Image (cartoon, rainbow, N blue to C red; front, side, top):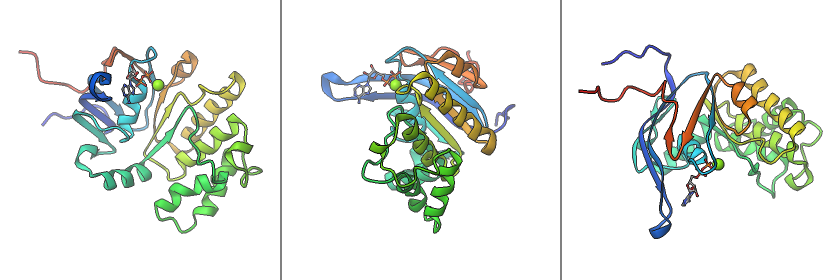
Length: 239
Ligand code: ADP
Ligand code: MG
């Protein structure tokens, strides 16, 4: 067996192929993606619009299943899990932040953050949700509904929700894409600050070059393929 020279991989993808849509609208999006992301690493995922960044991120997060290939997160082969097991695994081990926040509109900030904790069976979900909201600077907005919050505040709630269960990996898809520059910067500071505080592995889709530069490493996608495969796992040796 080959001995890895790096630490254990938090995320490993091997020969991932993925198509979405039906019939004539079917699109071959990921075309043989192999990638290893070490534990604790912050990776910036860049590439032109339509290159497959969101699809790749959702595949890492277990929200999309590949047509073929391996997706391993925190040592777990996601393909080996049934839908219910995968949902449980996701809820406990993977935090997800979207560009458009995706908060539950009928729940307060505190209820939104408590939700994944309750699903994970935490008895003190509401107390922990309050602590998470204070930690992102929203102690004074606990009982507000998403529509009563600014975009930046909504993204803070979404980040508090994503990290509440102390996930092994945090993925964020253009988390500053819907925010003005100053607010976006404060969100970036928050994400990197939480990372310093708690560790964990971060994968961040971004168009912002300064944000990508703040990561340990950048991976660039083009038309469903990785352009910088320096850390891709070894495939079969060339004869
Ligand atoms: P990016 O995030 O890099 O902009 P996406 O992963 O969102 O790229 O999409 C990659 C390509 O796949 C795009 O051409 C997009 O139109 C297409 N696509 C995304 N989702 C679907 C879907 N559900 N059905 C069909 N095509 C899709
Ligand atoms: Mg996208």
